Length: 422
Ligand SMILES: *Cc1c(COP(=O)(O)O)cnc(C)c1O
Image (cartoon, rainbow, N blue to C red; front, side, top):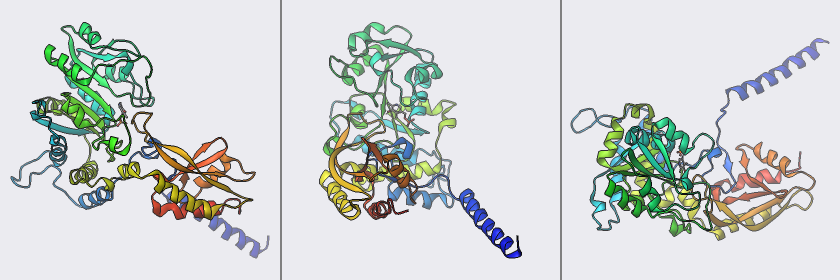
């Protein structure tokens, strides 16, 4: 090797080292473009935050904040007050005048809904029995299974009814002096259809009142906005459960609510106070970033500014709006040799614990890349900056723009125009 060759080798090493350094000092957790059309995609971080939520995180966390300080008295305050006042506003509207709506409600926030369910059972079951329908013993992703959470919480699971049919009499017959809770669990990721029966929430509440028990409902997704107006027939809201008289409702912050990861417990103030006093509440509480994001998200609801919340905005986008964008992209990337692109009808999935049947009609960009396999086309999309995540179906790539912000359409065009070029 002469000195010039050595120099070349060394400078190439420099490039390799620079590349390695860039990789190791770059971020591992990065933004991606969600082109799957699954609005609440757990692998992609569930609900994107509202701009106001992101701004509020920045505003309140780059310095100090009054997280636990009452600015009027100067005394120590509670971190929940910042959001409890907004939850009270959201749930006090639409009173039915049945007397139930007059009770004092309050809300506390924990790390996620799994923690909320655990805290409710641990506090209120007190080694007593919790009655659950056999049709509601759900598993939400491997680590959250109602029987296991029950075992960890010191509640004793008492199954009633059958997989497809449970009647109010089944609950009635199972009640004994050790019973503490009637638990209702939302069937977040499966459906039971056909010959089925499930008592109305109101009937469970009436039975609980008569026998001096409490009704806890794991609502899972926790819609605050009535999604029936967006064409989703089956999602009931947190307010409806509270109006039906449920004592404690638990739900996630980053599912249909469209906020940060969190678990809410909303219910009768005296019961919520007992949970706050549970010695493990502190181990489950959330930090200032979560409160900042949650408060801003709830404020958007209070102001009726639903389109500020990305998950809601995506749900309210029409099939025609999505179709027009898909057609515009197809026109620009279509290339008879390297890429075929057509726009077809399809369904967007809500995901994240909305009923599995909860889908919205959409228009999909369907792509095939000549002799390239769908998997290699997917790999090409994932290698973009930011990576683009799409669906594969029957050998085609499907792009659903419902979950793509319109300003990212240009990035998708660039990525697709470069298919097969290298
Ligand atoms: C999603 C879900 C959970 C778990 O909620 P996390 O916020 O993910 O902890 C529990 N129960 C039901 C019914 C759910 O849908």
